[in-house]
Image (tube, rainbow, N blue to C red):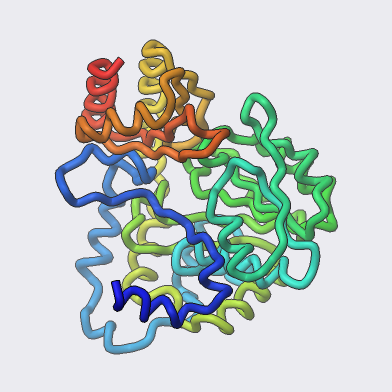
Length: 357
């Protein structure tokens, strides 16, 4: 106890007042069917394995490219943009975090939905940036009109949204961006590969749109930690300026090689995504039969509510060796977020639920 007190005494009042983000649990006490952190149930592309095998350990003596130019070139080719329109970071979380001081500090701050990625308010608090939370509509869809009216310099727009999984189509997204030319729209598309309505092509038309993506979900590389942003060259320069005030080398050499290999294998990942989407439909139908309320999902997870409550579902499943995500908040307490796993993982989930219900 004394050691804890002594160590904490060095914390600044600022840090002591923060509430950090809580990542999905990673328990080690037993083997679980892990459906709580939205990892891809299918392995990375074989080209990733080839890149790993070809990577010389001697390269680890040297610093990587500070701007990740080879990876930026690979992403630019895959996305149909120029290198100057691409920024890479240590996971999309870092890219999103850098947006806060780069674009929202010193003004009216940021706006985002009240039920969305829960790291946004943490980022804003960490950088002392004000923020406005706009409630979702009664059907759990995003209130884009409300976000547009918010007194803020920009918007974090998660599409598909998390934890609801509900997506916004490209036409509606473009209307939202076009109607708010004075706001920076940061489209967080972590799960877009399972939806297929990316706003990325719109970045060529709208200088107020920045699209952020990750290698963790669609590319099945959550363990490598890499994300990227695509947008107007001026926005990308802003992210580089923020990055170079924080970490000159955020993307390591191995990560750059692996992710460049992954982004080039479009056929493999498209096929894997189709398998996820097929399982998503099957799992949703089975959950509805079991009495769950489950909105149509455009992601690799399902937002599942039950009259017995999310905590009952979460604890009962954990006792039976299945992990899902639960938030003990007033608006989310009836729901769990369930990752779409491989068929055998989804069957284990359904078997456990039938036993409980």
